[in-house]
Amino acid sequence: MTISPPERGSDAKSQVEKVDNPATFELFGKPGHFDRALAKGPKTTSWVWNLHANAHDFDAHTSDLQEVSRRIFSAHFGHLAVIFIWLSGAFFHGARFSNYSGWLADPTHVKPSAQVVWPI
Image (cartoon, rainbow, N blue to C red; front, top):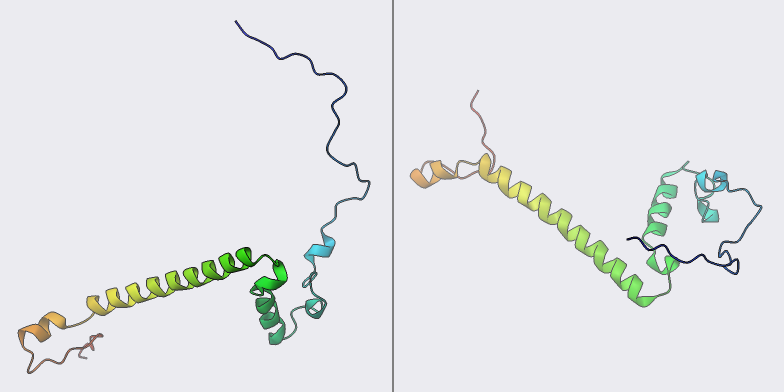
């Protein structure tokens, strides 16, 4: 047995505004549409640095202290993750290409090194 919902009356109103302005993304496709200093385009190195500074200026995005603190914490946490991956790769490759076992076998004649210098 199936139960169908009762028919709704015509008193339901649409919550969507009907705007006759066409949606265009030409403005957003231009470089620096959100900042007049960046609107000149990527012609200089300082433009790239200013764009980077605006991306990390969390106070300009929102004034909510909790949101700003959350973004700063996540940026620092992401930076720590990158450093951890970099260090783990350094430790792995340092152990992989070292002569640590040879140095343990004969520490007086073999010097420890992180990189093996192959004889020619």
